[in-house]
Length: 370
Image (cartoon, rainbow, N blue to C red; front, side):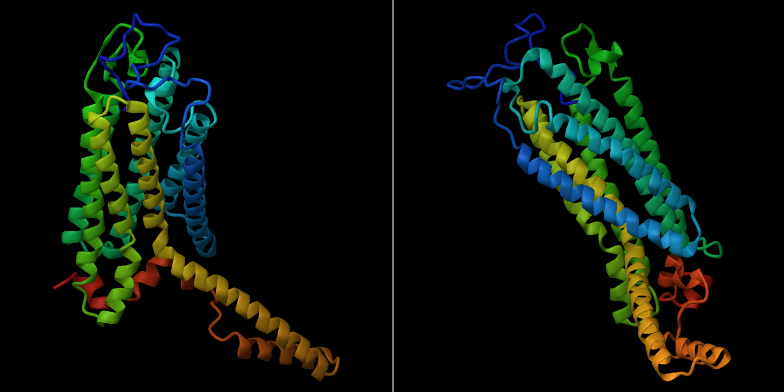
């Protein structure tokens, strides 16, 4: 959904060097150095990039530990690759026309190019959302509904996944076929016809919020139905409760989409919608990667501790033991066993699925919740 496919305030026969819309009374258009919020957007973008990149690195490190890649990892990595293109568009606009620029500070001839960047961005956004949410749902199905269990969680999650992807594919098709000729999706200066793509922005925002709520509550229902101590339930629940930040982002996006729907200053209003779209995407990566974070970080700490202990033990042994080869070797081996008890002998010890499932009673895995 580009900011506009139709707007009665834009005259196709108007002055191309004039403002895209008439400014409010008493305001003079500023084309050369328009007021904007570029500095704020730059800080927010860098923050989102760091959070997303760190989340993905943690996830990928966990895969390296396991020496095992799943379909969910491939989907997540594909989403991140597309995310890089998403970032490129944000910075392209940042370094050209700017963010939160009023339409009366934008020349009519420049508006199609700005509109095109928004249009490309929303297409990329749809692709990221489909991939990252598919990865989330498939991961949770693998954790809470293994092959022996085909209960409520499996069927409800599978249904949500299929409906979610069908809806988003339908939105992509609607956007691509929304205008005739195709260029009119972003260029209002050419003749043609379009459907009301601004209304689609509202529908999309509402659908997003609904799916975020569903994805948040599905694992919580399973976790709190388990036969385990409350303390353990809280711990497992917390890992999957990060989805609440996605709900917050989706709620704000819906609010800004409603403002966008009623505003004639569409470039300014759509800037807010776009930032909350980016926040949603960032939250998606956090939700996908967060469950592996505790095990990955604990592994990093364990490795650091074990390395330090081995170094200290080796120095101590060299000072106390004579240079006999066999004697020295046996003592060092004994020291390693003493100072690094429980050091994993295979990568499965750090399998994320096992980490979570260990907290789930075996009878639940076999038979499902009561």
